[in-house]
Image (tube, rainbow, N blue to C red; front, side, top):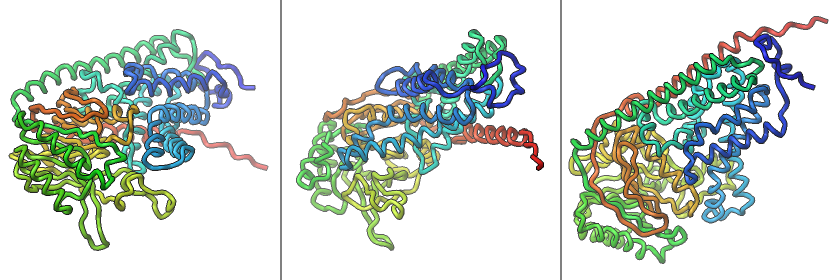
Length: 542
């Protein structure tokens, strides 16, 4: 039977076993509660404020358990959050991947298990490295940011649903993303959670890892956390005013977008090729009285190979000439290479006469959507997009040049990776466009979760961002992150707006994820120091 928690600093010398308690129902409940609160902070619940307290129940469960049990509790929290966040994957896999429901649920749980590991490592390492109040307050935000950074590239990367993304509505707060990216915002949120947690412990007389929390220490920790939040908000207030001034002086471009609302079941059916193409031509025609300089069609808006299918290409070119505006058109592409045919998910730039000016090929492909990773070991798995073979990735940072502007396309999955937007801006892009087909997600929360990623691409780079989707949500995002002129889901719609084309480069564009890398380095050094400080186990002589 484990010993009860002591209430003095003398417990610091006790072994991990004697100052920890087993996992019981109350800890399981607290852990599950944190997972639910984390999910509730994301669209479509509107509870973004929950992120600021979502980790407190998990921390309460961790306060008197071992690192090993912390790993288990953290994994359960992360798994609960991930299932609630990306539940829509099961719908996508059954509706369009034609997988049986039980397999789709299994894949969902597998990915959620992987995502949950990051919360598991956060919990275990927090216990291991943060034995005191001060250490825990310092380690927690750095550790969370470091783990989010690792998730951005491990196993091809999955940046969906970072903690900082939950604050997309709080425009004043998120302005600092142009300094440290979304990782800095996640760190601030975790810091506030930790400070509030220790303040609660100090007022209730409860201990953290066998040590009571002195009220002055907890008070100072909360004060520093509030000061950090206040400084972030002050920067945001000043920065928004600066960006408004820059927008007023910047060159502009009048941009329209078309949302065709083509059902996914019809999108690749040859019987609907002509009607789908006509739908987008008609939408562009509706924008003609607005005289846009540029009109953007969504990802794979043409259900054929543009400039290979001659008849349908001529139809598109006539429509472009009739509108009198340049177009960026999403279309699959194919070309011959040394090993056969190479397929690409592309964006074509046509001038007002329908002449091809440039093409961008999607740089970050969707696993199992556009290619099958580990095909050698997973031969039984296929892609959900079965119309062509595996797609090939294009080079990152490609831009389309038009009328003195350099436009950075982000096709679907491209846009959730900040490095690709940074690469485009470092290559001279003064406008970002996102071409997407979110029909896969149905009326789930996924289209809303996808949209908020682009708020951060706009703020990080200080670029206007045009988002054209097949079934919604389309719209435009200003350089301060404000979403305007949005469309509804599953409706045919057009939008047009004059947007500012800023040309300055933010600190984040220049240095990228340096903040997150510093966090990772600090956590690594602390881990090594902790390892070297551990006393050697006495040898047992027979």
